[in-house]
Image 1 (cartoon, rainbow, N blue to C red):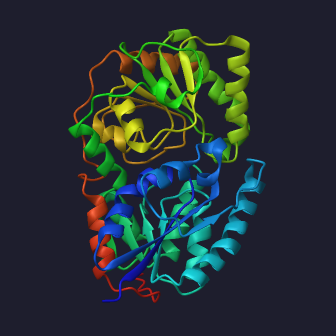
Image 2: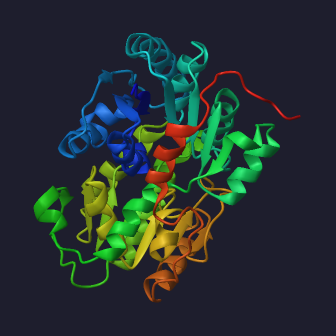
Length: 385
């Protein structure tokens, strides 16, 4: 039996957790052959070097694509994407996959879509149809229009993709594979490791036996000039509240240098005793840390997806997740120091929320693999206008 060759492109740290369970399911499926390409910031140490965890999990990497230009501004984003198109075009030409999978909405993912679609390779888009408040939404919808098969994460997203004119038969709600990892963590949610001892990080030691918070704040690409100011406001709130906090560095986006600069400047000037800074953690360890936290603070989609499933209280700051479907666990605030502090205090002092399954039931990876093994693969789209 000839197996279908499914080429999955992972371009960044968060993309790996978004697709890990599907990678396993594809690899183990008798009708499928996994071709794994790791590219972009997933290869870079300064953004968490996700490739270390990919290799540790035992996946064979077929190709590595270095494509990130320094600058962390809109021009660098555009050029990085252009390099991605050129490099990934060669990768797909050599690997000759039966289908290519592009993940979600990061700015560079459109390079995967262009390189596949222009070579008439059937394109599968994971997690289309959602809405947010920055360049990611434009990229996500552009990926949708380039894709032939749409494996979305929620019913709301499914309806939106169909409204965009896509063939309803090619739009399936599989849920989000990251929820599969969250389900595993719920089955054993004990924080059975010391984050500081295992991952090091930078900053002072503190006890995790008491309440603690997790912060993930990324720049908003359409507001990148404000990145340093915005992150400094959150740093002030956390420092003034004196909450033990695990803080994770931003993704590579326009404004990431401003966010990073804001963190370094604040750390050097104030040496906050209650904050420890980290680049990355293994996906399961991170979710265990999150599950046992009293609150997630910032603007990461983790607060919208995994935290809804885990019931973790979230303070969502600013516009990055604007209009994305969310659960009762999310409290939205602006960039006001007073507003942020008030919301953090409220969320830190309440119990966890009831779990909501907006983005899946924990079996997405197997659903995705099964669909990819059976669905008709064609680059000829049926558009329903």
